[in-house]
Length: 231
Image 1 (cartoon, rainbow, N blue to C red):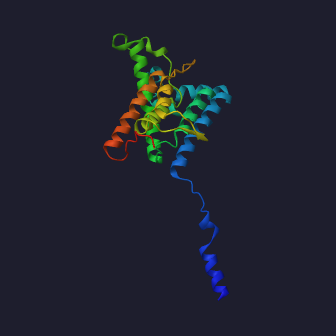
Image 2 (cartoon, rainbow, N blue to C red; image 1 turned 90 degrees about the vertical axis):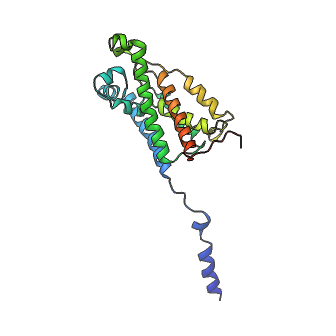
């Protein structure tokens, strides 16, 4: 009788049932994979040999010159590399702060990141061409315009996507930050980062517009709901 009771106790009250293991989700793999990729390429650009630094600028910087030379892949690769550690830290910090607001699936995160970066690069290249030369002069003056380098576009797309769905959501950085995400997003998109090799001014606005359209599409297809009231 006593042995039966002990057997029943061991079957019901197992530590693994009381404290189940936390399984890593696909979103976590995607999220930290993107963080790690940006950090790795930035470290390579900062401390790598001159050949590596030159290769990064040539193959990861989206510009009018790169597109004219046929390096269209730079419209995608520009989103995973920085030459400024401060710029990289600021962008990745934004991703971390926004992670708990309207949590994304791995697919949503990757789609917003990749397409947001692509739209930002296209917007940046188009704006630089139009602002420097336009239809009248073709590429005459646009080849010397700055390129786009960094994940500002993907961050702008993701933040604007979440800001439209839940404008009063609160960013988290270990603790909740008492500033609504819509304000954070506006300030971030208006920040103008321009250094020797790149600029992210026009790319942010293009990517932010893409994020808003993606959020509206998600609401229209009933994959997401608007949360415009404070919980």
